[in-house]
Image (tube, rainbow, N blue to C red; front, side):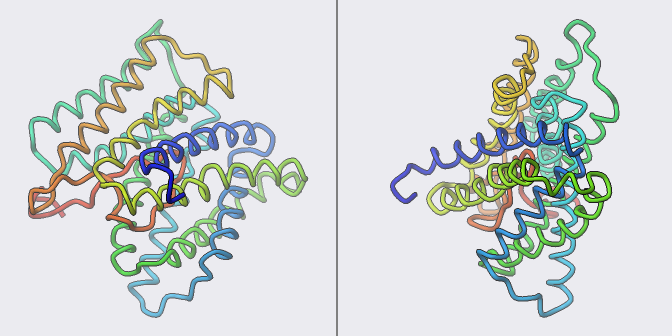
Length: 311
């Protein structure tokens, strides 16, 4: 991948995640959302354990970070029950609100207030055309996944600061699998072990976790995190495209405008962030640190108490 331009790698990662989620939505129709999450995280954990072969944490702080990190990853997968109730593009846009909110809370700039208003406008536009209504449970699942993503981003930075390898990530995904696989087995039963389910689950795990992680890790070595954050803001639009091509979820013109509003809000939040030295800072995990793409991965910086006046 060294010869492939870094922005191309990032765009491939963005598309891979959303098309992987489209496959996951199809799989949820046969094995249920808990079963899909169990297959995705279980198979992804096996792949990452084989690749990184991590050693166990040696102190209490590292243990708590891995457990918190893994719990946040498990929570991000609430996007799958949301997908059973919402179009892929809307679920992605709602999930993006979590990290966008985290980014906006770190600043009091007027630009950030505009980004917040733009994001809210985008979500409202999904409901405005023709009195469109979406199940409240689906909206709540997507928002919970977004809140989990915000927590994941903060824990991702803390975890990455204590390790330069992928071992903590592998352990965190394994803990996420421990939390979710029993629920999936209880819901899907032996259906999860059928060849079609295992094959499709492997496709979901590769497209929405293993492959995007590899692509993004390679891109982060050569691409400023500011650029990474802007590119990941394209995820609502790519989710809409995946929904149209793979799920037949045809969106109206106003709904495409809504996706553009949420994506632009995410990009604006990225471009408005600066670190303590005045350098641009993208809302993404710390430079070159571990990042497992979940349903949808827009990134946000860890809140800076000195800048934001918040803990």
